[in-house]
Length: 383
Image (cartoon, rainbow, N blue to C red; front, side):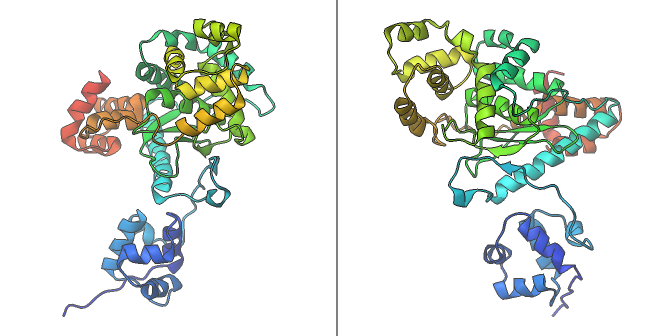
């Protein structure tokens, strides 16, 4: 029988690695395929793990073996604040996939900064800010005019609008990624403690019209320098900071002055009709590249619908399944990659390669796809 070698590790690092991914001891032991008693031995320092156990921990905790062999637990930035509208017992509790998405976003922005340096570009500084005491509607009107966002409304659909919005904010110095955040009812999150502020949108499922609102909601958090993990609820009882960000996003995408010029709105206002069909709301929403619930919330704020009517539709339309595409296609890796990392990130990676700053293997590593997918990915970027 071959001898089993055990690896000397700091048991505090093992505890840190497990807790950093929000795994309880019982669930961790089950995933590691060891007994709870064995895990207790390893985490107490009474026993050291075998190489197979260490490899299993590396896979389960999503940490390299080198990290697990550190002399002490590393210092990591905390999760952004929980800004969801959820049951109080769930506040601050997240699925491991959410934690990994935050970790991935931090890794991506670090790579983006590295790519900029490799390519000789300066790190853009996002030079806009607001204070909670500011009127979000006034801030939205000012930035909408300054950034000429009214021109975006002339595009044909919400997908095109989203792409333009993302490119514009990236050029202003914000890193924007679209990641799979399917747990915890999240629609997006923002980080303000990195070299560049970061916005992450939910990649799969939701329509671009929903992502447009989430994008500017998270921009509100960045303006306030208050990042967070958000469900972007339109609930009347949301936290004050969420109300501020919702009001900012609503005005920048659906200006009050423009909404009141819509023929259907004029007719309802004139006839004092405060109920709306879904068809009417969808038609109005299409003009602004947002979802119907955003329009209904705007109408509530303007006194053009009742709170009971709004709450009824909110409970129906704010469910996770609402607005999710019913078509399921096979995976398109190049297209997923472009959505996930964004034009700026990928164009910088290809630029660094073209300038011989990185080799083909580095390019594949930065982009995160196999070499065979690189030509298709580049073709999608049209560079």
